[in-house]
Image (spheres, rainbow, N blue to C red):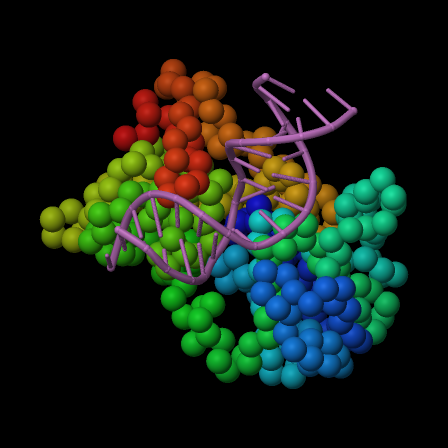
Length: 293
DNA sequence: ACTGTACCCTGTAGGC
DNA sequence: TGCCTACAGGGTACAG
């Protein structure tokens, strides 16, 4: 589910509400998510005051007054919902089975003002870790992450340098978090369509013989942030599980040009092609083989 | 250093 | 209505 726009939407929805809040205790309703939850989880967070929530790649990072960072990843189905007296309880924040009890609410962070940050994750591919802030950049989660596509280092020259020497295709190149941090299966397909580039094209075509950025690298460098920013403005994409931190769905799924549109007409004006579904390294890719070359 | 596959886990959609 | 299979936004660990 959550790629960069979804994680960023969650961050924006929570940052003002969490900054300055003091954690009273942490309730872990099971010992693990994808990985075991941190040892002494509640003890290490209790009493800490939250700083401004950050995002790096698809990670949410809550800086704490203790000098630790609470690092959180939503996996495929993770969801954060802020509930309690000073926030709005949106209907649909939880998954309610027929019995009426919320299920898959695995971690609840209780703040001393009575609010609760509830982490719900049916598939439990998400995780939480506590990392000392001084060691964050060297931590294995962060040490090898690539460039932020909405950051200052993102440009055609970076794409040429990073992709120019590789023989992999553009889909796999863009999906690899060591190259680009935060893209996922939806937005790679959408950005490649926007850039009119085939996912099968080799990443080496981002550089010319001298290693300079090609016109294709420039198109891709423009398309990726354009698609991501539109998606953030729409509150992300909800296929099934994803919700914003107030419980609302995203809306960008209504703007998909190719994702999940297998067999339908390409939406590019005057293209006339049809959207194809293929598989790259085990993941579905959608593209128009008429206008994407 | 690459690629492909299996796997982690639950829920849902579709075929029969 | 049921059963079975395939597939889903994430990432990792292997084998080749």
